[in-house]
Amino acid sequence: MEKYEKFLAYFAGAFIFFSLIVKIWLIYNLPIGFDEGGYGLVSSGLLDGLDIFDHKPPFLHYLLASWMYLFGGTIVSVRFLALLLDFALAMTIFFVAKNYVGKNKAIMGSALYFALSFVEGIYLSTEIPSVIFGLLGVFMYLKALNGNRMNYFLSGVLIAISIWFKQPAVLFFIAILVHQGLLVYRNKLKFRECLNNVLLNLLGILIVSVPLLSYFLYKQGSLFIYKIITFNLLFKGSTSRIFSIGKAIYLLASVIGILFVFMANNKTKHKTEYSVFKIAVMIWLVFFLLSQEVFYAHLFGLIPFLIILTLMSSENYTKSEMKMFYAVIIVAVLIPVMTNLNSIAREYKSGDLESQGKVIEYLKQNIPDEANVFSDNSAYQFAMGKKSLYKITALAPSFASVFDLTDFCDFSDNLDYLVLTHREKYLPEETLNCTLNKFTLMEKFDNVGESFVEVWKKNENN
Image (cartoon, rainbow, N blue to C red; front, side, top):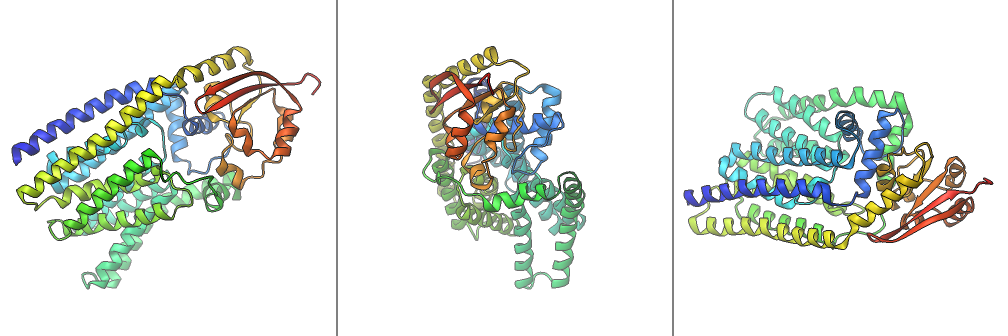
């Protein structure tokens, strides 16, 4: 069985190398996405001293702004940062897992994550860096349970960094709180010790968060609270994507992993670590199911913990059980990879990259550098190298459900050009009509991805 495990570890390492090659190719061969264009706009705005809207905590934007300052503000540069973070999460899974299951299984865990993030990993997101620091924060908490109480504080610092990348990372602190409560309930810890541990962990969170919160409140006032907290509570999405292919893959992987976790509940040698990881998984799963609009990216907080739990569940398997376990791991790698390769092939054959490229080339040739432009799709605004002058980076159902956009017609007085897609429908009809009366249609591109692109120029008499 040991030889078989080593063979699978070599296979996992080869797969990670193969994945990196494919991901680098994808960086240059996929159209610019809406979200990555938005991140680019906010971060380039930071470099220019602008303050535009985004409902995510600022750490990713400042990280990307620093990266763009060093390596340029192109989509290729943005995606290489995304790939670096993607690889860092795979290595974090390896680093944590090898403490409990050894190097061979740990590298399988990294490969399994890379299979699940096969395409998504090249698109910048707040989830991946948040989970890196959240996972390290929980790992330091486990270290604290073994004796060094200062690790409770370090755990809190890491979780704070995680929260400043993505708000739901507060669930990592809640998982620690629940585990401490269970220890008291089971008479394994005195309440006073539990209180001291939790307060030390909370101190780590506050020592990072209070100065940052004070700075942003001083800089932006109550608008910062509205952006980061209020907006997300008021958010009303358009439609749930629960039946998308990406989400189906993540849900399938989650169900398989949870089955293994509960099958092996009493077989693991690391009962404390197993319990903490299981609590984290259950809390993230509840959050995922209760989210107002379900994006499979929300499962990123669950997947790394579930991968490590699944590996730990195999510690005391019999030979026949191990054979089944390895077979499932192989299938769990191959299914998302084959599905994503098929998706990549269809995307490449569709010509979306070429059609989007033609639009961007037209915009760069026909819109002067000094012109004020707004696009309802952040991908085009970012590709043109334009700054976002409006209170939001683009139009989306989430923004339309929270913001009053009726002032857009007045805002358009300051514009020279509009670049509109199907997202124009998120403007109130009266506002859109009022706006377009000031502009003349220059060019329309049909069948660009799943949309159209219209280029409008301000009327000379306006």
